[in-house]
Each structure stands twice: as structure tokens, then as C-alpha cells.
Length: 130
Image (cartoon, rainbow, N blue to C red; front, side, top):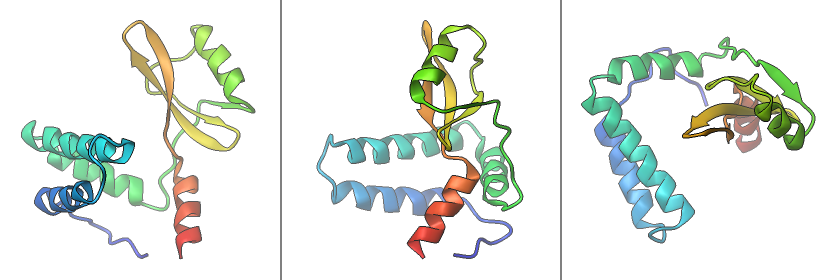
């Protein structure tokens, strides 16, 4: 799939597609909650006048030359979890565990890891879909 140089972020279209997907998904399922969260994220960005910043971020992330700085590499999730407890981790750090991207996220009172695929992982997924 070719990506245009300046993809538009059409909030209404995205919300319509998310709504249609939600209608086809059992309410309160994991997928339904993900669609709902995505819709609220987009509405938040729009309502806080951050849509232009988001559009820039979106275009940047779709650029094939975009690189994310990976702060640390770990062979296992256990190693990464132990590192979190050392106090070296900082909110929003990107790490890699066994070739997969993760983001360090600050929750009240603790840091945790959230799946955050690296661009090369996303490109790999797209290649498999073609």
C-alpha cells in the first residue's frame, strides 16, 4: 500500500469507521474497548486543538525513513521488567524485547511496559498482508 506524502486526518471518517466496527463487535469485548479508546483519543486530540500536531506526528511516523531511538535491548520480558525496577527507566523510553518494540509508561506509583511496535515491525506486518 503506497502512503501519500501528506495523509489527511479526517476525524469524521475515522469515527464513522470505528463506529461501524464497534457495531460488528460484541460490546465490552477487548476489541470494542480498543475501538472506543481510539475514538476518544481522536476526539481528545480534536477538542484540544492538537489535530495539526497529530497530523504532523502521523505523517512523520508513516515516513519510511523515520527511525525511533531504541534506548535498550533485552532478550526477555523478565530482563526488561527487572530493569524497570532499577530506577533507570524513564517514562516514554522506547525499548526492544526479543525484537519487539515496547514503550515505558508511567502509571501512578509505578512504571510499566506497553506494546509499541517499531516502524520495522509495522513494515513487516504490512509485507505479510500483501
